[in-house]
Length: 308
Image 1 (cartoon, rainbow, N blue to C red):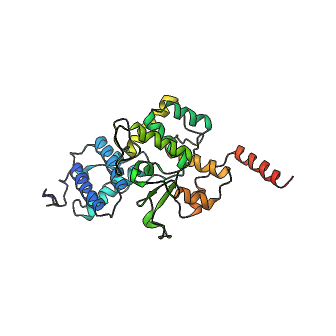
Image 2 (cartoon, rainbow, N blue to C red):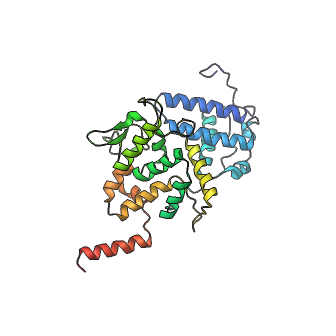
Image 3 (cartoon, helix red, strand yellow):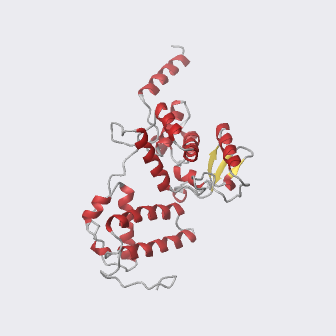
């Protein structure tokens, strides 16, 4: 039996895909509760796995799923990784004897390069509802990751000596070599402070420390999937086509756009890396996509400073 008293069948062809997914989900929840996994890992697993169950059916034997079904389902690297992890975990726990999907290769993780033009930014902000608009503004003015925006609570807000959000649990924290950095600092400019003041005034009651800062139209914290769907719907409504490389506008494009703007404005790589929560500046470089007009402005500025 598992920890809540439900019988676990022996490794065989009998266990259903849905049962396997439930067992893995319970294990992940225990890992999150023990501090060994992050909540974002559980959220992403639940989103990707539920999509797979809806696509292929959860009542069928887990080992009866064919590789072609995962090939047809996959939408990117994360969609395949989540399913492969589910099956490999099932083998390690003795619930299934083999992974019938092991031949399906992970798609290329790829490298985002799409940045938003000023016109695209304006169109997105004008078309977004007030709850999603503040998320887009916050992404643009803090250069943070979408999952960090979702995680922010009022207890993370510090006003002295400098206004900032401070996170103790953040992406890649355990992999950082500079382990003395035990917090993720997100400095706030005047515009962000005004935005936060409007959010606080919009709520009908006093904010509690554990309340999330950014809420959807139902008053609930945003999920990663909800933000993805909201951007997808905006793309369709505004007819925002993929760029010449086939890359769509996504929420993460706000981070790439803001990093590119900061680089073009002359912000040093080490400073930008700290703002973005990167331990290494070569990681930050992957977010800087200078366009021809940026380079044109740069040479004009450089020559002007040298008196040429």
